[in-house]
Image (cartoon, rainbow, N blue to C red):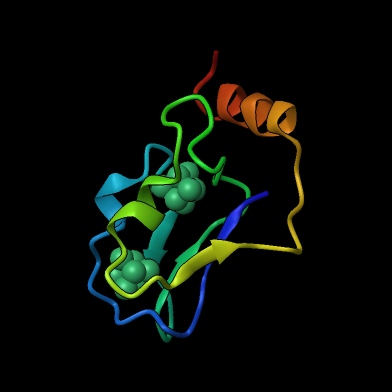
Length: 82
Ligand code: SF4
Ligand code: SF4
């Protein structure tokens, strides 16, 4: 399941550099996560790194992008050409 950023986001930008997949960017109103790139950090870290650094807990699981651990790992491998 990809992560998503809610309207709680204060656009601090702290999460951007933490993402191993470059999935986070500045959106029209607040920061956004590209679900095609987010792997919940599977293959890199045990916990979603963006969630760890967000000061206002604005990053949650995206119920519209449900994926198994194996699917997330396959996405990670596809993104990084492995
Ligand atoms: Fe990037 Fe990991 Fe956050 Fe997904 S969970 S947006 S891969 S830092
Ligand atoms: Fe928004 Fe949290 Fe990312 Fe800061 S760390 S830009 S508040 S989602």
